[in-house]
Length: 132
Image (tube, rainbow, N blue to C red; front, side):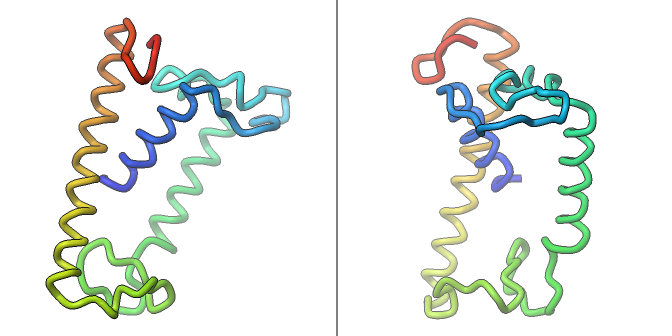
């Protein structure tokens, strides 16, 4: 949940800053920039686009984001013998520290996206985000 919350928080901030993907989100001419920000924007996505997102996430859950080699060191370790980025060179204390940092960042992102969602429902303005 922490990794998803980090992406959600970052996506919320970036789209509220006016950065959108170029092009159309649907064949009917709906542009990415036509989709609203935050929670309300999820209802602007065409049904076909929402289904594509659902099927893509389902595909990732069923076939990609799991330990297929049996080599995982901890829950959430999806390297599968391919992606290392130097993890195996760290000692156990450093690994434990880095995992704790990732967990704490994920927890902070969960609180952050929850706060943005609540403020969006309440309305008003936030210093960094602007008008909700």
